[in-house]
Image (cartoon, rainbow, N blue to C red; front, side):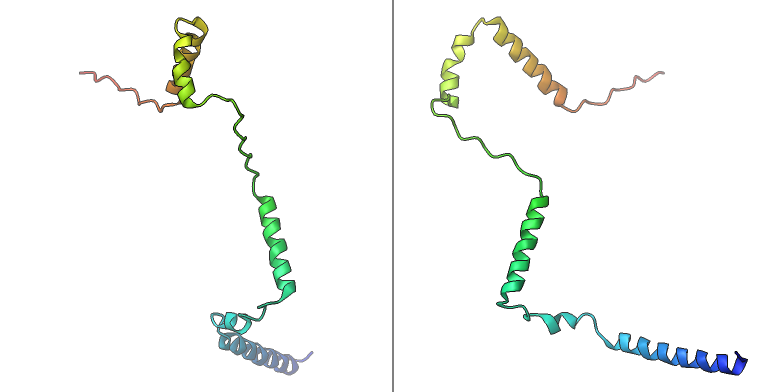
Length: 119
């Protein structure tokens, strides 16, 4: 290929590239949504697609455990407080309470140790 022919092809490519750049710059992407807004109104296929998308997104969420129904005859807080006296002087109950306190204390954030000042 000669230099003249190569230069001619390069000029044609540059002109085409400039024309494409101008076309892209002429489109305003902020207003493009107005062209399609409302075009899917009352479209059963679109509504079906949205329903399937919602089902898919919900299937990706972690499942939360269902709350257990309250068992008939189970003790309420009022009944529990009335029966606390029956555990008086029960070594197993006292041990459970002690371990419960230790466990709750282990969950608390610990204060940083103070460094002693050496003078």
